[in-house]
Length: 492
Image 1 (tube, rainbow, N blue to C red):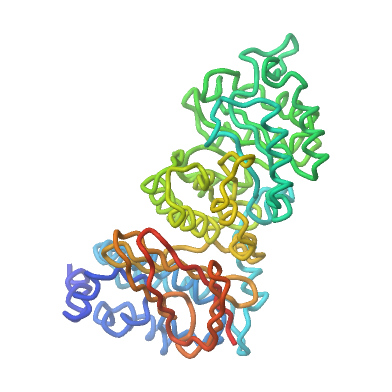
Image 2 (image 1 turned 120 degrees about the vertical axis):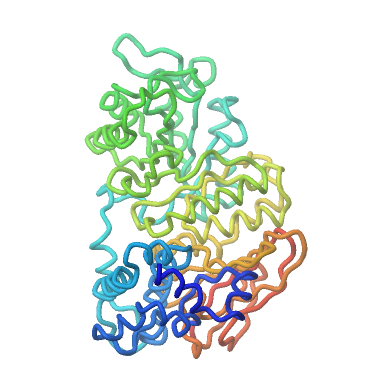
């Protein structure tokens, strides 16, 4: 147990006291104190004399390098894994992991830019569904959060109209997605799904034509079981090819595929069948896996679908929203262009949270590269909700071409947190989030967010739409309870 004792004793008393107040996810300030454990020393003796996660002779502003070195280090060291490794021969194990990390990173040339070598390495290790969809997270609307089963073709058509008239469509909200309860509780004589005559008398194909005429796309819902979750219509289990052909013939552009009433077989097997069926349907259909995160789909779904639920259903409350954010955050490294983690749809505008809470909700979802699917009644949306959902600067973070999911990088007792992630153009997105019950002053230190201490940035406040020039070393703001500040930092 020598390694365990050393890992504890190696942190000075003042460091242990600080750690009790603030949960740090960085390595720079601990590199020297933790040398007693042997693994820093081992790395140096193995041919890396200046080894430290933030002293890798990287270009000053290679934010993607620094962010992911920080992330991988934290996954190994920041949550108690060092103790577990010490118990199984930790020093050698830790050194091996860190050496492997270095070997996986391309050599960084000086000059202050993310190299194509890094981007190539990222793409090489990522296996994604090759349907050309989801290069950025999908944006649109879904009927479930607000309407549940109380839907009809008039509602869907009017929602398409409202997305256009409010300007939301122009901002990128293109999918109009029908959730559960759209069909009859039987198949026709040929085994086809049938739209419910009482609520969708014109049929789905006609509705798709209307939505397409607005410059939008139509989404639909089914289930990888014998019935959908409402138990009001058949699921697609055993009918994958037939249903995929039906959806394609109707002009459907998006399929949300739920996980209710299944026979207990592997979700991966059931979802793979529908994935293959969609690819053979002759139409490009975005495939959204709604498996609720039960079997950790982030670890296997990227070659099957374009997004995958990492959580259970969201509800219109602060506790539900924050817990979904935390659950989704665990899988940040699996998100990528073509395949996204999905913490469920947006509740903004449904009335269960305050304006500041909804602003936090939207900010975190945007940073996490989550699908931005509106869940309120767009036809009667409030001014505050529309303002939140229409923030083009926040949307731009979500739709950034780099496609790296931001994550929680620092937290204090009392609910103060820093979330951050790299963007294209060597920029960094940062959220100072106060989940506590009273105002808090929150600081994002450059070492937390993958910037060199010497980097000077312009800080763009995405909600105040204002700039602060020449910021260096850290960014500090006072944040109200349940509110956030969101910035994009651009090196000068």
